[in-house]
Length: 192
Image (cartoon, rainbow, N blue to C red):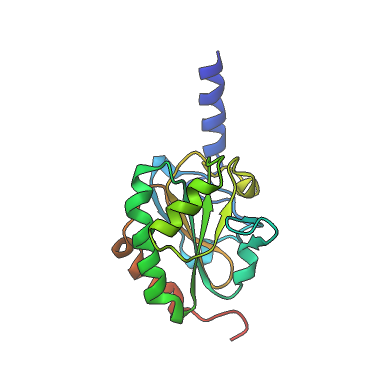
């Protein structure tokens, strides 16, 4: 009976149309046909709702996606326990270093690490310098309606207007993201 309820909810969730995003308002995630690389044309992009939480290294400091308004924002969901994250994180660091002068920002969200020291060591050991939200239960993602918080690693790419431009529900390499990041960085910033 529980399996049937999951199927019904899944089908109902996908019944909003052919798109992977609801029209109007804040971003609402629906995976079209189980795709893992989802790109949104500029006229279909929706605003990223609030995504915020405490800094991994400074619990008194709150980090929010809104802190990077006007930048291309790569939000990466990771965990030190995640095998693919060990390869992906240094790739994302290199991509950020190569593009931050173009107005690109990388923001991590550490999930399911209930001992803060482990993800801190993960970042230090790999020379990762981008900010990261410490969020073991995934509460910072609750406003991302329908987003599969259990998919780690995954990456959300937000354009300069604060709209979701792409989602990768898999591990990525810098070369996977660079063409899109360059394209989004070339788009005009708000009020220009």
